[in-house]
Length: 383
Image 1 (tube, rainbow, N blue to C red):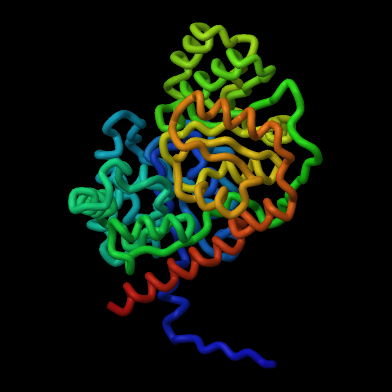
Image 2 (image 1 turned 60 degrees about the vertical axis):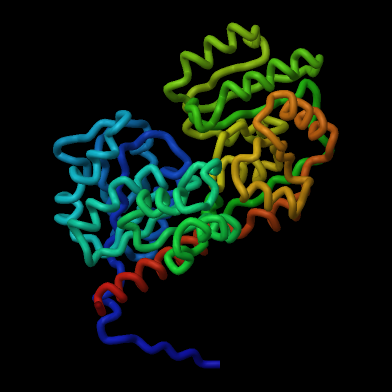
């Protein structure tokens, strides 16, 4: 059957041909990795993409795909405790000069620049990905929480939740019409799931992947390791990632006498070999959105044990308990017991993994984002 397309006369002019991605710097982070991969896919689809960085710090600049433009502020704004409060004003002029058709904020951390960018470019739509809860869960969804969520996301025209369940949570805090769900694309299209046979071996090989910062709660991972040792379980824990807490983590390893069990690897450019070798992923985060590291572990055939840090993981485990275990509290004893129980279970099958995370592949998400950018750009053009 023939297919017919109707083109509006100004569609090409009004669509988002140039997408701007403001970032603070090139520090390590899952949101940055995924944003760079999206940027590369948008370039492959014929769009111009520019990254505007507040500073050149951090090791991730080489991971920016070919074809993606990079601009760094002439007067850099290095990352510090309150640097985000200055970043938006510093970026407003350079961003306007770049004349983007749409702006993509890669996560909550960068929402602080939205108001200044919107003031400088009122006709340019701003789309922001909600990478973590907008407000602390302890605040609930009452008037105070809604006011705080509205203030923090001010200037953002559309908020993107990384799964339908997370969008339902988001819609309790902000008007639903300003939200949508796009599965976070932590998988490339050509990545295949590697299934494993049997169950984890002994000594158990645990893997922790994340920045050594309070959100990831690495000290809880160490407390869990100490509990496993006290229970007589033979194991190793490999920790990948660096951060401000590294000195404290090293002191805690020494204090708990875990030097024979725990190894710190720092930043690893290609962690794939560690995923292949480990038996289980240990996630101790205080809060998350859609943690890409879970997807990376599952693709390697590895199950997880995690804290109750995101509704996305709750849905994943509810749909198929073979994928991993979610404990009820941020507690080392519960985590250790969960690790021991999970170690006795068979590895998840390739079909189970694909069914759970197959919707998080890159090309589909990249296309939906472009549709959102184009729609908003046309709407702005018509107003």
